[in-house]
Image 1 (cartoon, rainbow, N blue to C red):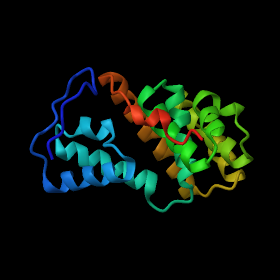
Image 2 (tube, one colour; image 1 turned 90 degrees about the vertical axis):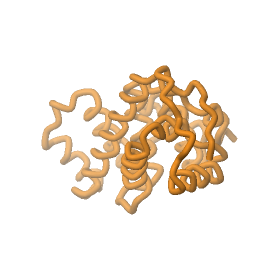
Image 3 (cartoon, one colour; image 1 turned 90 degrees about the horizontal axis):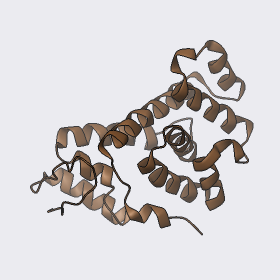
Image 4 (cartoon, rainbow, N blue to C red; image 1 turned 180 degrees about the vertical axis):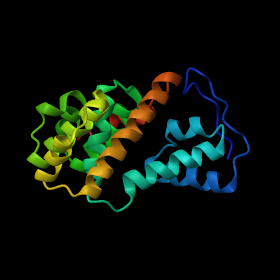
Length: 192
């Protein structure tokens, strides 16, 4: 698969012309499922070992079985990305929240101010925890974890909430540092 180079990062990271068959198949699957190859994957393709490390961790955190629904994990991604003003992740994961919730307004509320969304107690506790972990990680205490338990989360769920929030804090910083831009297609997804 020969990917045209485009300005997906301020660093203009090179895109490999000769990707492995495994990566070509993965990109073809993304293109078939999403109608595009996400720019974050294209950016990581400069080093396939880094691409696979990123993709495998992302897929494990966001798609593997969990006590958290896919929508809840996407809500965490968007709430964390809103705190960090991550343009890429707000566009990409905002689209996922719109799609998974079936409610474009809800997706926008999570992206702009999750506290304005009509959340249940579980969702509110989850996002309060993820945002506090993003803004003031050194101030996390047992009371924060207990608030999640009181909202119905198991200890394993707390691990998953923490891991998703931490992953997006990392991803947001890489996107900011490299000026990674979202695919234009994300902006139109799941609007109606």
